[in-house]
Length: 425
Image (cartoon, rainbow, N blue to C red; front, side):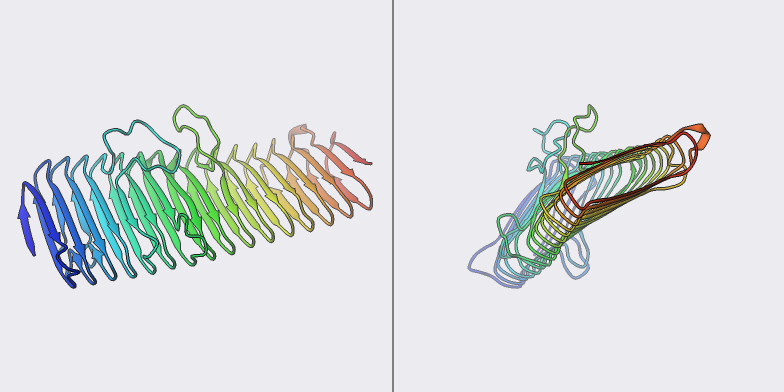
């Protein structure tokens, strides 16, 4: 079926579970509307190198509904919308479904009732959805321009979401396997790239095992929030620029209020990389055998993180002045925290607290005016710390506290005028 119109299109292929049907759609100019419904297997909207599209106008709306298996929207040549203030909504159920959509222009995906930033996992924007029967399905979304937004939802197992946004004020909200605990091996990959600033991504309620979230953001004032539920899952974040936020707790007049990055379950991992100044990472993990790796380069960066239960590991590496880190590990045994604040780490601070048994804290700070506040409650714990140099005559300060029996504290300070207070009781 080939449709070319500058008005409105309502296309229905729902007669009786019709299979292997194809719709090609081309609309130009403003205020176009297209609704496409297909039921059956192997149906397509755009195929064989011929895209469906709405181009060159503003205020256009596209709605696609497909049911059953192996259906596709925009495969081979992605479906597109060009212009401003356009909306695209798509729904699929069934195994092996696929959605590929590209938008260029500004303020696409924004509903007229939406005002400002809504730093929660939102349902106020254009939506791409694949339901709980959509195993082995894929959503690919590309947006180029300013003020673009999308909601993406998937249920089922072994699914993938890929989102690329370029420009400023982009927002992406992803929900995977909502209410479908036990589905596994799904992934979310989001790339936001701007030479200016302010984009946001939130991946909420990613439920299952062996899941992956990979977020890359470049520019300034980028934000990301994540919730994962299950075991053996990973979250990887890479941000570059000024004033970026992972799990920001706000409030902030410009960026609003978000919540911390959170993982629930055993064997989960978080890898965070931030380069630039005044970046923030906040988060928590609940479970056993958890892993955190935080790397920040630049001045004024901070990490605030907590882990609960046993055999967890947290690693922090900060490069630059005035870095700060605060880590708590509670409710279990055999936990370890290792922090290094590297050269030119003038004015750095580290705060760590553990309770339980056989826990370890190891910290190293370079240059002067650094502060370490380290404490443990429980038995057979150890604290090892080093403060190297007292640059520019600025002394370092260390305060170590251990409660209960069979604990060990080993602290080294180099340079002049340093202060160490160690209390065991």
